[in-house]
Image (tube, rainbow, N blue to C red; front, side):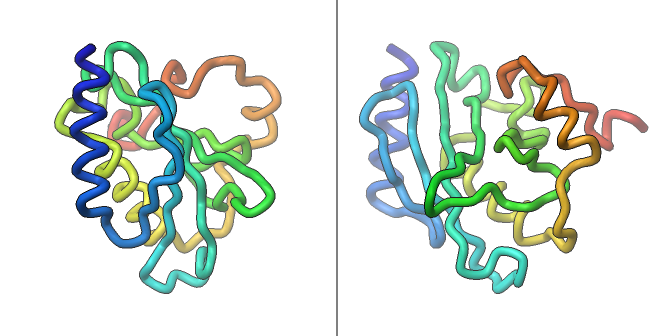
Length: 152
């Protein structure tokens, strides 16, 4: 029940004040939420686009990170970014078990992804995108990405 209690608190806070460019789409249950984000800084790569995020929460949230992916549908593309695969999987240390902290929440994840998109200047997918998408069988939260700061 810790998960439901935590998510209820997050939902109340988001309903009271949703940050600019973040929209609650669906929170019908405490296992899966849909959120839309927009990049508001005028980055020409993302101008006028809305991107849909799917959050899947395990029974261990907030100790473990939610599984967060971009979802493609008729009106929401997967953003082009060197850390976002064409199937919506996101390579971001915040979403990794090692990089996650229970102080993070749905709002901070959305804002981190907005920031990640804001700072992007490359209209490209990660290296090996086609191969990764074709061969990956793991859930996003179980993938062990090598982050630049880990390789030093």
